[in-house]
Length: 448
Ligand SMILES: *Cc1c(COP(=O)(O)O)cnc(C)c1O
Image (cartoon, rainbow, N blue to C red):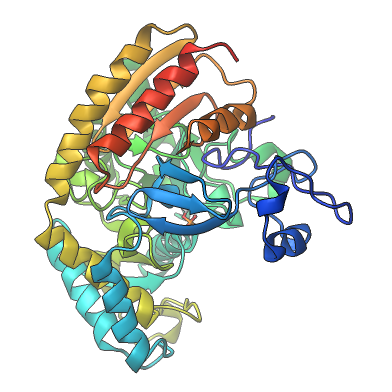
C-alpha cells in the first residue's frame, strides 16, 4: 500500500533535515519563521523524510495565493474545497471582525448565543425535508463521529442494542479519526495497518448496476439485524478519488434504508454548499437523509466548524427520563462564535451573490476545457460535475513531481492517487480558471 490514507493530500514537500540549513532555489526569500519553524512542524499525510519543501504562503485573495518570495499561484483546490467565495471575502471578514469585538468564544454547555442559533435555524430552513436539529462540532471527522454515535445510541435507546454497525462503501472517505477510518475505503483507509484497532463495519460496493444492486440487497438480507445505518457521500466520493455516481444510486440507498429499517446518513462535508451544482447533493436525488454532516465550505473556508443535523425521529429517541439516553458529546470549541459568524456571513453570500450560477458557469468551462485532455496519452477519463473537474490518468508514478510541475506553471493543483482535479472557488475569474485548465493540458501533454 503506497497511497496515503487520505489521498487528497499526497506526500508533501521534502523538509530541511534539522539541523542542516535549508537549501532551496529561493533560500534568500525564506523568512526567519520558515527556516526556524519548519524543523519543528509535522505535516499531514507526508513522508517527512522525502517530501519536498513546503511552500511559504504569505497572503490570499480570491482564487490566488501569494508566496513569501513574491510568486502568485492560481489556486485550483480552494483550501481543500472550503473557500467557496474565494479567499478574504470582505463580507465574511467584516462579520468575523464584528463578532471578535463582542464575543470571540463562550462555552456552549448550558449557554447559547446569537451566531449559533441563527446559523442553526438557517441551516434547518435551507436543508431539504425535516432535518431540524443541529449539533455543532469543529471538524468534519468529528461531525461524522457524532453522526455515528447518534445512529448507535438511537438503537440503544430504542431497545435494539445489537444493531450498532454501519454499512459504508468502497471508495468512501469520512475522516481520519479512528472511528471514521473504520468506515473509509478499506485500502485507502489502510485498514490492514491498523488491524483490529478499527471497529468492524461493513464496507460494500455502491449499488450501481444490476449485479452490485443484487449483492447489496443480499447483504442487507444477511446483515440488517446488526446494522444501524447506511453511510455515504452523495454523488461524489471526494477523497476516495472524485468518483461520481448517479442520483438513482442515492434513491436506491434511501429505499433500502426504509425497507430494512436503517438510518441513512449522508456525509455532505465535501458536496454541501453548491459544489455539485445544487446547494446539497441529495437535492438532485430528491431524497432526505435521516442525518446529514456538513463542514468544509460551511464557513466559506474561514474558520473550523462542522455540523451534524438530525431529523425529529432520530432526535426524539434521545428524549427520555433515563439520563443514559442523552447524547454524551461536547467539543470544547463547539459552536465557536467566530466560526458561526463566518458561517452566517457565508450563507448571506449564497443569498446575495449568484453562487449556483457561477458553479454552472464553471461546470461549462471545465467541460469545454478539460475535454481535450481525454485524447492525451495516459488519460483514462475526464469527468465534471458542478465545480469539480477531474482528469483521471492510468496512474501517477510521482504525485510530488507532478505537483512541482504545476507550481512551475504558477498554479496550485494537488494530484493524488491517479487523478488531477480542480475544485476552485466559485468566484474564480474566467482568466484564472483558464490558467488552471491550460496548465493541466500543458503539463499532461508534455513528457515527465
Ligand atoms: C474532508 C472530509 C471529512 C473530514 O473532515 P475533516 O474536517 O478533515 O475532519 C469527512 N467527510 C468527507 C466527505 C470529507 O470530504
